Image (cartoon, rainbow over all chains, first blue to last red; front, side, top):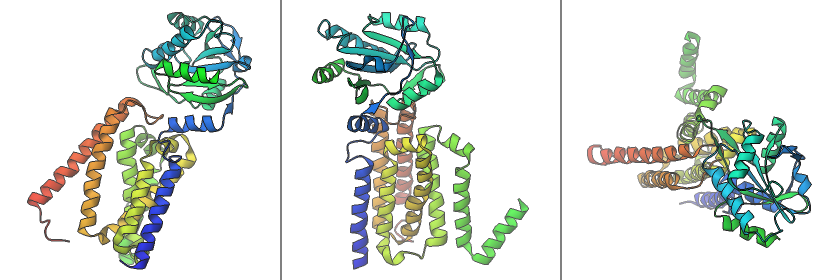
Length: 201
Length: 201
């Protein structure tokens, strides 16, 4: 092996490993979902002032909860798999938090990305998980454009399948008291959400 | 059509086979970048990973063989530096995050169309003839084992690795990768038992 060959091989090994290192944020992230979570943690994002409607038909914005901790999930009410476990996570959080915490220091919002969902659907979903509307709002976004904006900010990808269902990335999103999205974690098991919330309170 | 044939023949006659290969490679890239082809080949994980990207690499291989086979060779000791470039580029494009990025961001789609032929196909095309039989055997055996492991991971993984693809596609890709690996193994078993493998090219 000549010198040139050796130099090339060493240089390429260094460059190659460097690129893979950078491409995975130092071997931390290999999926777009992982990248979204890490980016959120490193650089919290302000939320767009999107107009939402809850299960009582009442209009609100995510900014209304500034000053308290906000937990956000993205769902659609016809979903029988992932969204059910998302709902169960919030149900468990609601049950296990000390009295008076939910609705004052902590609020929860489940947002539907399904244009078919109406107020009755949201109400039914909320009742399924015994959601108290003042503490846990099940909401939809009236304007399609604003929904896009919201999904984009949170980094939610929704793909319809051929059976009228959706494939979507599921997680629990934490919005801090200044109104910035700053942490995204797995929704299961629910104890993880409780632990994370506990550390933040 | 006739005019095209005439042109091909003239190119072939006046410039030799190298230019024909280059022309085929360039046309293949042009064909793959047509919106219809892109939409079809990116609609599923299998088409994307096992058809589009390999075809882009093949196009690069043709261009490499056609136009660059004598270039850089003093820097390409036994074909190893070229092989390293191709291996790192392949590893990069196997990170789900960047495959996702190529689907959601036009810039990354362009980067994919440039880097797959340039950094996988061309280096492989100009390095393969210079690789020793031993190096080639290492490449093949790694390809076989890697495809099985990746396939198995995709089938068994409980997480969705690409936000742009459905989970069932992930599973289908896993099985297909294992079948491809099996195909390569069967081919090589055939060569070992029935081929003239001992007479090196």
